[in-house]
Image (tube, rainbow, N blue to C red; front, side):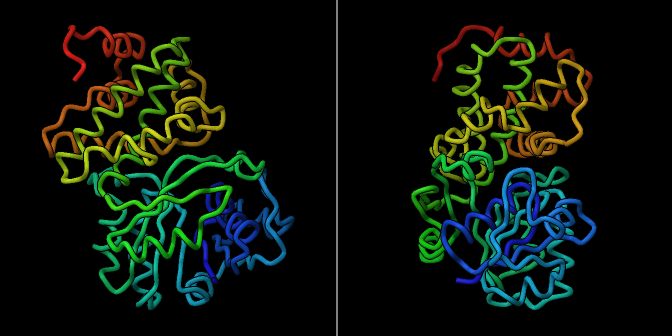
Length: 321
């Protein structure tokens, strides 16, 4: 199969490496000519994590990447996805193409899921699926296996894509609840911020409570939005907690830790924008999200991190369920 990967950052390049090296697909990897990631690849075919195989077609020509394959895997910043779709729709004919979205985020200004944005900007002339779940580039290139989810509204499309991407390194499960998978995958990054904040105050023992209560509040939101309330307990959310709340590779966990310690971090973590989106969804659906709200208060409302985090666990006694 020929597959184009749009975006040559940390995760996009890992997917390209995986599909070419492990699955032996013909892969085209697209990156903007001005990006440092693309420039490094053109010079050495390497980044800090991996080496692209010689068979991978590296290009800065979006038209070539789109026309070369019927399956396009997209791994770009979630907040720039709407503009990307609009630009793509004006420049290229994507009729009959299949897009697989590998970003974990929600549009901060609207709270909309990425497949919603795709449908609004591209329409029904192309198919859309998602690829979410736990895993870090460093683990995959070292041969450490994981399990992930591919989902869409068409089970036959889901099965086809999962079969094309499944291996002993990444076992693929079928996802049938786009609402739960997309919201859960995005929200786990906010839980990662909270976990990092707990690490910053040397309270890692509270991560167990964070995991249990975090999954519970996202489950309530997913149910209110019309999704399956069990989905957040699967690979897209709770199953991704180890990689997000505990791993040294997690940008979100590290961002939260550095934030409460007052240390600068040069890269913005995905959970920061997602936190804004979740507050919009909380208001829209009338669902309390106490952990997400606490993170929002710390990041954007000037609340004391120490007092706010302590307050999360000082609430009055009540039944767990």
